[in-house]
Image (cartoon, rainbow, N blue to C red; front, side, top):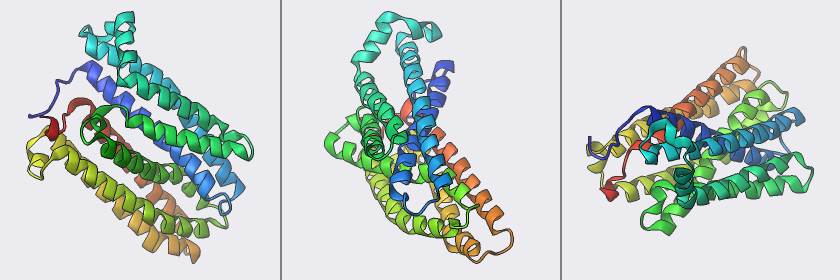
Length: 292
């Protein structure tokens, strides 16, 4: 298939590591955003969960970041897994854009740990979230032209996605609290702006990297992207069901409303996992049509 790289054991591991790294980054950034944006509406237990998620995700992200160097070294060495510890190969990786991205992401994830500090901690963590988003613009498909526009669009797309991903577990917990319906309703109102940014930035990125609609159907990049779009559309459908039916039912204290809403949020989380795998595949083994 056009634009598809060979796939072996190292590549599969790279895809899985990327998916976990993406998930950790989005969860870390999003949990910080949730803590800052809903500090006055969410109950203390919900905010505590968000802070703990931010810290846990940041630590996981740091571990995956270290692992990614070995995986990348293994891929470029041609020696398989043996190349993962080769000093020369690791040096090449560090001198590549991945090294620059690692500095941004490492600093950002360390800064997110400050979310546990009172007052100024959340602002340090917020700056860390921005640094993580910027790190993704230092590698991969965003290195093409127009680079500046691609970087801005990617950062906006990631922050909007993080806002959604980071809110899922706190909202699932909030459904059990007395003020949960109010928080969920407010989140739905704010999320509408996030979804708009997510769609516009994502569509613009897809257009700039594909070059034409026809390229979506004739290349590996386009086909994987279409799979991702289908899953994202399903995610939007679940979110719409929550906003229009399940959250109002929770507010009206209807029977089994809490169970139904928490189950629906769990389905959103599953969709996010599939999207992460699709995205990791997209950035690991496919080439944007504009670069073919």
